Amino acid sequence: METKTIFEKSVKGRTGFSLPKCKNAKDIEDFFPKDILRKVKPNLPEVSELDAMRHYIEISAKNHFIEKGFYPLGSCTMKYNPKINDIVNILPGLTNLHPFQPEDTIQGALQIMWELQNILQEISGMNAVSLQPVAGAHSEFAGVNIIYNYHKNRGNKKTKIIMPDSAHGTNPATSALHGYKAIEIKSNNEGKVDINTLKDAVDSDVAGFMLTNPNTLGVFETEVKEIAEIIHSVGGLMYLDGANLNAMLGYIRPGDIGFDIVHFNLHKTFSTPHGGGGPGAGGIGVVEKLSEYLPYPKIEKRDEKYFFKYDMKNSIGKIHTFYGNFLVMVRAYIYLKMLGESGLRRIAENAVINTNYLMTKLKNYFPVPFQKDVMHEFVASGEKFKQFGVKTLDIAKRLLDYGFHAPTIYFPLIVHEALMIEPTETESKETLDNFIETMIKISEEAESNPEKLKNAPQNTPIGRLDEIAAIKNLNVKFNFDN
Ligand SMILES: *Cc1c(COP(=O)(O)O)cnc(C)c1O
Image 1 (cartoon, protein in one colour):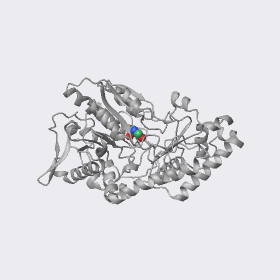
Image 2: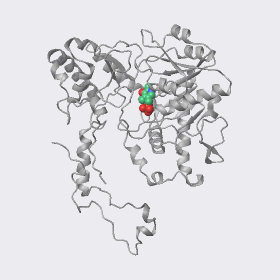
Image 3: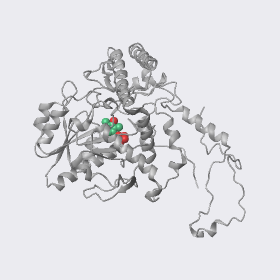
Image 4: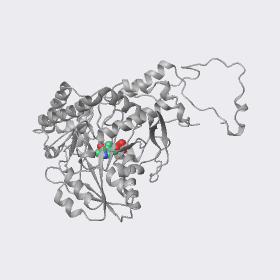
């Protein structure tokens, strides 16, 4: 049955909520000049509260979300986010704050930000943290900007940034945005940075090196200290793309192994529901010599008072309005305070054990080219199913029929027909076993009944879309005609 839009469900005069008539009310024209007021009333849907509820519940249930089913979308860390985060988040003392309020009226909010900065410093081994960036890519932009300004201030002539071929696309993109040439180096047969290839690529023009660890193959880069020595020897800076920090939490501090800049994805590692376009938060940490380059204002504490510090002589300036996405910070703060040190370590342990369990059970059906030192995710290949006319895309679509979200596909590019699977730490063994069984069944179907995969999904509200046409001929039903 086709779902109607809320506008189509509208019935003239029906209300969901009514306000008492205001005595002595003035006319709106007493407040606003007539010529700026709209001439025609907006065409808003008129529905009862129950109609509105049913409408949104109905359309939300067509979607896939973590509370509905397993969501092994590699590199995205679709973990369960405890609801206590959201309960704290809607406290009026937090939601009713205004960014222009004087500092002495927002001491609690500043304390939360200050403590969160400190916790992230401790986790990463960095000397200073800014919470202002609102996404991973945004933090990378800030981080490369810091690299750029650091070299500029020292009179260094630097033209390139190096990264492995497993890098997330945002790494070359943020480098290029600063005029750097992004140099991609080939990984070795373990899926790690190849030290000799790196040495050949490094010269005095290198501004920095961007590394994801564990990298996007889920493989832990074991040679970070050596890489850092090579990069530092030409005056370059080491950048950790820490979007997926689950596997390291409480065990390894990036600052202890040679990184100068780290970014966090609070919405991946530190629990904010994401994936539907909701707000995120980056967070970026740096070593001492770069701390004055962070975006201003920083939150500091003196004489038991918290305040904004704007006076930072080399700051790259503001990169977002006000202070970033405050309520995402609150979620991360609650989550971290609840877990404590031992809880953090258990995230890492369970993320790694869940992944290795899945990989071990699936690798005979879906070959995994890089298996050594696999941490929080692994990348399998669907290439062998090509002989039956089945692509990785078809496998992913078939998974939807069984009630699972598909893994990330066709990334990283170094694995053909890639299926990038990240179970996260919050899944039970039963859920993993269910997924394993289904994947094995799909691998059998690929051989015995490839048409089934090529026509999947059949059990979802809508079937296979022509995704290119959907982008090129976007048709969003929207009748907001006046
Ligand atoms: C998700 C991700 C990013 C980008 O983060 P956004 O918040 O989506 O901008 C960067 N690098 C890696 C490795 C990621 O997984």
